[in-house]
Each structure stands twice: as C-alpha cells, then as structure tokens.
Amino acid sequence: MLRRRLAPYLLVLPGGLWLLLFFVVPTATMLSLSLQEGDIVGGYVFTGHWQTYADVLGTYRTQLVRSLVYGVITTLLLIAVAFPVAYWIAFHAGKRKPAYLLLVLSPFFVSFVLRTISWRQILTDEGIVFGPLRDAGLLPAQFHVLGTPVAVIGGLVYNFLPFMVLPVYVALERIDPRIIEAARDLYAGPAAAFRRVVLPLALPGVFAGVLMTFVPASSDYVTSAVLGGPSTTMIGQVIQAQYLTNTDYPAASALSFTLMAVLLAGVFAYARALGTEDVLRVAAR
Image (cartoon, rainbow, N blue to C red; front, side):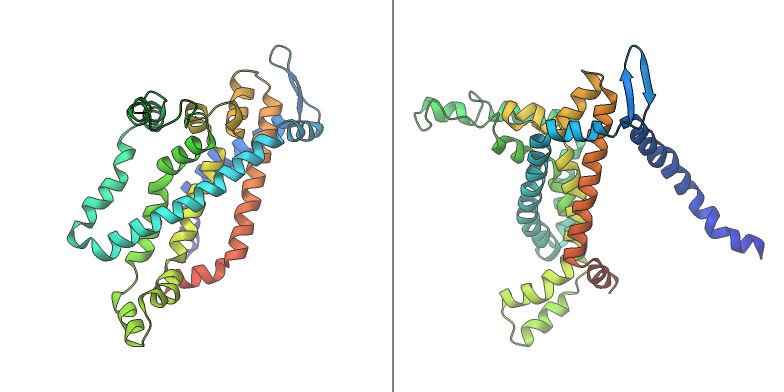
C-alpha cells in the first residue's frame, strides 16, 4: 500500500530534480545576483539593491520594446506562413507526409549560427540576390536589406518556422476529415467550413506554436547580431554584452529577469485572451 502511494511521487522525482537543478536554482541565483552590488575585481555583495532594475529599464527600454515588437511581428508572420504549409501537409500530402515533414525539419541539421551567417551572405549588397539586380540597374545604389528590421525579422521567421509548423500540423492531423465533409454536407462552403470547423480545432496547435516561437524570438540575439545593425539591437544582445563584455552581472541579471517577467506576463495575457480552458477542451476531444 505504501509503495502504491509513493509510486506517483517517485515517477515525478526525476523531472522535479531536473527542474530544481536547472531552472529553480539558476533562476534564484539570477534573482540574487541582480540585487547585488560590486564589481568583477572586488566581488559582489548582496545588498537588496532594487534600483538596478529601474536603472536598466530606463537605459534599455528601447531595446526591450523593440524585441517585443519584433517577437510579435515574427509570430504573426509565422502563423501566416506555417498554417498553409501545415494544412497542405496534413490534408493533401498523402503518403509523402514524412518526406515533407523532413524537409521542414531539414534546417535543424545545420547549426543555428551557420544558417544565420548564410542568410547574411545572401542578403549582403553584393550577394547572389541583390548583387546581380544592382548590376542590372534594377535596384538603386542606396538599397539595403542587411542591417534593417526586415533582415532581422526575416531571419527570425526562417529560423523559427519549424517550431510553428509542427504543432499546427499535429493539431490538423488529429482532425477527422469526415467532420469537414459533414460541414460541407450541411451546406457550409469551404471558407465557412474552415472558419467554423478547421480553425477552432487547430487552435491548440496555434497556441503551442505561439508559445514556442514568441519567447525565443523576442529573446534572440544571434539573428539580430548577424543580420542587424545598431538600429536593430535587441535586448538579448544587450544582456550578452553586459554578461560577457562589460562583466556587469547585476545589470545583466536584472535585464534577464525583467525580460523573463515581461514574456511571462505576455504569455499569460495571451492565454487568457485566447481562453486556455477552451483550447484545452478542444485539444482533449
């Protein structure tokens, strides 16, 4: 009887220890460090200095807002691009679904950094795309893509596209085609059947895809560092510079904790607006 009572807790124990060691402890350490004062030479002392948060938020508000805006735009573009791809694979790819899913996942066989650097070579002024167009006189001399928000957002969309396609595809794959046929038998046109049947049933996948793309896209620093410029600096670049270049660990920790809090607030607001209970109820059917 005792073993049966302990069985659920023993099953949860490995995952709980993992979260404790690699999430709770680092998060508590980061919070403690953000409230310390000192320097890398003399060391840091915990003083409960909350002013650090106000200082970094006042200094880097522009980068934080820019990161959130880039994250929202990237997520919306990912939905617009990924949904048709996932829909076509789920309902029209037939026996070739595994092959098309492999194509979607194929970028993961290459390093994230290498993929981003490759896009830098493509988007450069003298690259394989814009170089010939400029030589042919089809583009003005002052035309640039690299170092602009377009390049950064485009790189984010490319790098995180599979994270949106896969959950949406899984949700669409679970839809019984007979439900769509029944809607059409009840005189629903293709647009009405999609709006009132397919889209509500696909919401769990969209919800998961947004969570998997908005958070990493907003906190990304590799894409903006490689494809962007001074006017596209994101908060992830600032945190990286504070940690590794300026060695201002309290400021870097305060920025990291602030970013995490803002992202969590955004996720909870999104979940509340979408209706998490309704989404989970649809997913359980």
